[in-house]
Length: 296
Image (tube, rainbow, N blue to C red; front, side, top):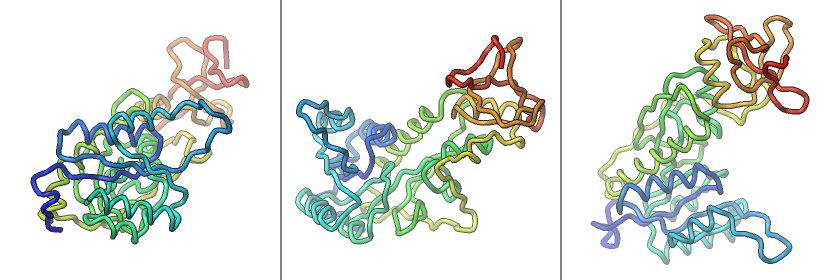
């Protein structure tokens, strides 16, 4: 992928594929904070519902993008009309590189080919582990000590393209999963900015993923939101703190209950059996509020 005169020695102009979410914004923030290595020119976002009345406030991400001169391209499920509009924008604005950050659909080969250096995707896991939409949740659920962020070249699969850059990140002992996910997104944006010139120059190699080592991280359903007995007390506490509400098996009754929050010493709570001991947690009452000292 040789550098053309329009990009050699200059900031790499990029078109971003994302959503109106914290991950997309954090990835862009990371790329912008890395300096002038990349210039986000446009952001492709799913088309949102239009209000029936005038005066509806602009979505926060849209306002943030416009303040930075980043053009917004709203699309449906990437129809032929959408693809033609994006290809025209890439051509007219001389954009050599695409960047994915929480885009809900596959970017078709037709569009990836129209972007000279392809589309590099930011994924919050150590691929090929935890491909799919919710890798951070499943990293907590499985009790992993570390996960990471990967920048890979998009292909026809889901998070299956060759790896361009990757870094390992320890999972924090406290805090919410969404905050940690945003931190991974920022790191991913910084990583992408740091390799953009090398990638577009063709001096950076990508290594294929080992599909035999791949695992999947689906949107959590009732099964995935149940606390596993294979977790240690520390891992179960971290999972519940990061991803509430969850369900757990009451060790005294064998009944599955909804829980949210670790109970303090002396409080009446549900006892959950873990691999190395017991964890006491608050049961969620019928009004959706975790019950504390007043009982379970």
